[in-house]
Image (tube, helix red, strand yellow):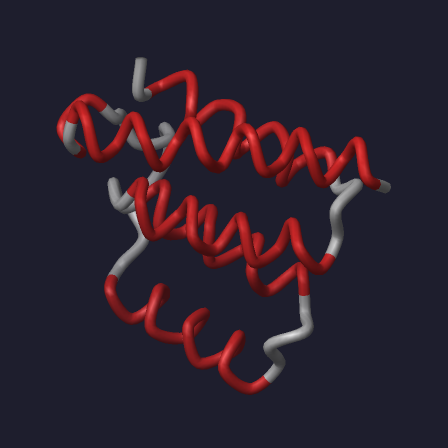
Length: 102
């Protein structure tokens, strides 16, 4: 568990640093249909109602990423990682976001 958390922490730190250095415009959102503001709002309400639900945080991360909001996506994925440190989707998403910033 310590190793998984360390990997997540490194990916999250790299993504945050890269966003601060390079800005948001270097990120490309995921392909697919964009998420509307109401979808993001609904997911934000879901994580507010169930803050210990890793799946809800992952969904919010995906929604922010698809909407072109990488910093908000990283924040949601970090929260999901704290709840589910071995989740491969979360680890991969943080790694992708960190790599996209380079």
